[in-house]
Length: 301
Ligand code: 3HC
Image 1 (cartoon, protein in one colour):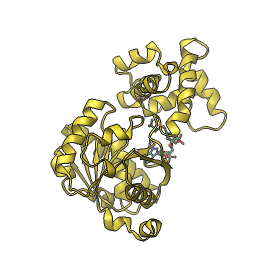
Image 2 (spheres, rainbow, N blue to C red):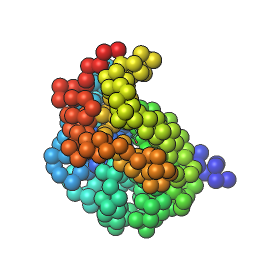
Image 3 (tube, helix red, strand yellow):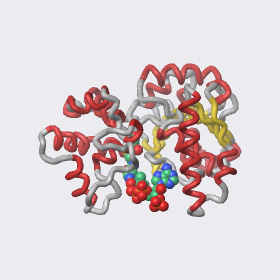
């Protein structure tokens, strides 16, 4: 009976307005994807400059998509996105919140406690966290049964996969609705039924990341040598370039978390910590394993 109800449920009846919290690399892309699919979107960040930067990234991306004929009108998509620094304004009418704020427990806790007070009682809550336990985040709110993980991949506008992660208290209805929502934005959902560190994709990639960092630590090869070699397999990016692309801090935080939750073998190397301290976070700060100040690095392949 439940399955039948879900099939009949029109996700667009239940979800009309999506609030995306965070206008960074992931947040802006998620907001863009939702608006492209016809949803009304509010995109919120804590400072006007962050919101503006996110809107500029959306504009650049939409212009490319329009030029290629992948969307009819960038203007029309943009008109559905309302940028704001006001959290209440962002979430008060939302039917779904997708949180993509920094991967710091204290920040997530503060945001979710506030959102819980400001959002409508039937609003569904999701987090785009790469690693954190969904159950822990859900418990920062008074509605853990309406809370799930919604994990996009970078860049959200081009990557098809979205993991839908069940926390310990997430209801079946919310899981099913989110699966339908992911389909409605043209993505491929994968249900992750166990709330484990790294979910599926990042957990699979985690051991490779440890060995990758060891290549550098042990002086076996340079990032250029590794990336040029791996790209000869036909992959679009080498692994070091990909770390820069997604964020050195994202990998560092993930490895730290796996070291605490899965095995001490995941402890990140010292040089990675130093890169984070020096703000060498990859593409977003212009410097990581590569110099990104003039765009994507040229790696001979
Ligand atoms: N919007 C619109 N168009 C975009 C875009 C965006 N955000 N980003 C790139 N494009 C366009 C480019 O303009 C380019 O168009 P062109 O061919 O007309 O010039 C086209 O897409 C291809 O881009 P590039 O020429 O820069 O290079 P690639 O062919 O290598 O494609 C890529 C870019 C799709 C990012 C590809 O390199 C790729 O798939 N990389 C791997 C990404 C990946 O694995 N992501 C997952 C990371 S893990 C994660 O996110 C999880 C988290 O928890 C850590």
